[in-house]
Amino acid sequence: MTLVRYNPNRVLSGISRDFDSMLDSFFRAPVFKSDVCCDFMPNVDIVENKDSISLHMELPGMKKDAIKVMVEDGVLNISGERKQESEEKDRNYIRSERVYGSFSRSFTLPDNIESEKVTADYKDGVLKITLQKSEKAKPKEIAVEVN
Image (cartoon, rainbow, N blue to C red):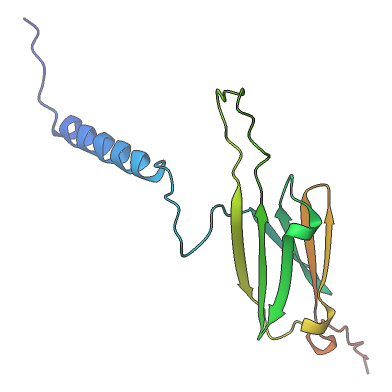
């Protein structure tokens, strides 16, 4: 028989490991669809420079006509629907990971954006929306004179 020294930290580390495992399994659970929201949520990168703010949204496989971009009351709304190809009866899927259905994303615009100058471009499955900043919001360099 082997003598093992009691270590209270070993018990606590086991509890901590079990708790971490529980949280991991909770956050990996599939997201349930809701009638209130949408079927999927496309990824967005938002980039700011001195003249504008750009949004880059991944929408692979979507047609340009299925995407709607609106600016209303200081809110940018992007919505659309990705339709599934017609199913063939003699086809058995082994795995299907692509998501189909509708989506909607809304972004509150800062006060320094000119909503009349919003442009959208869709190319290679990426929607690029450019939001122009107003002239008064752009940084200005002021020359300092030395006397």
